[in-house]
Amino acid sequence: MLPKYRRILLKLSGESLMGTRNYGIDPQMLDQYAKEIKEITNIGVQVAVVIGGGNIYRGMNEHETGIERAQGDYMGMLATVINGMALQAALDKVGVSTRLQSAIKMEQVAEPYIRRRAMRHLEKGRVVIFGAGTGNPYFTTDTAGSLRAIEIKADVILKGTRVDGIYSADPEKDPTATRYETLSFADVISQNLKVMDMTAFTLCQENDLPIIVFDMNRTGNLLNVVTGKHVGTLVS
Ligand code: UDP
Image (cartoon, rainbow, N blue to C red; front, top):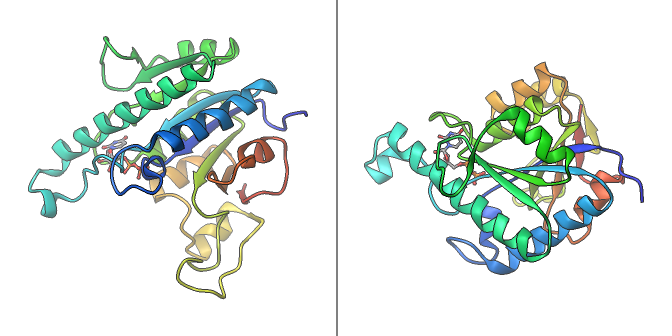
């Protein structure tokens, strides 16, 4: 099987790691994701990953937590490192070589983020996990995903979610919602569709980075996406 994309950035939400739990990490999900990632590295795809932290901590709810936004955001960034370490362990277990790079220095557990080094790892076939988001409060891990994807010259950003693409309305609420196969960046804006937050989305648009939103929980889907099967929604 030939890959359509040579280098990808996979964005996973922290919440996807919860599986059926309502907090933290489900080992089964980790194992499943590690195996899916292994499958695409086996056909020669270079894989970088950005994971969210929403299963552990989200910074923006200042009024609920009583912790000021910037401080909470740093806590959220640390949460993404925990998830990154968990995914790294799961990838190790299935025999995939990995490096974790953190945007906040944490020498004992992760390399610092160094763009050129990350690219060398990718060329050598190692999966590179980017932790700690962008390293800055007031951003999201979607923005970190877009930013890193552009920096490392990924061909596409793959946003793994629990729905199989972008719909005309929320498919979990509106049964008449229909799925788009392809959309332009302008369509997404004019129809006010939710793909990523505006900062992340605009970065992709300005740098011509295509986005594919797809269901990461369906086995084999990641492989389908990278081999160019019609899965999810492509924004380009
Ligand atoms: N965060 C941040 N800067 C970044 C990335 C993340 O401050 O560059 C913080 C922010 O508080 C966010 C939390 O980390 O709420 C977890 O990330 P996110 O909510 O994007 O994770 P996901 O929704 O994908 O699980």
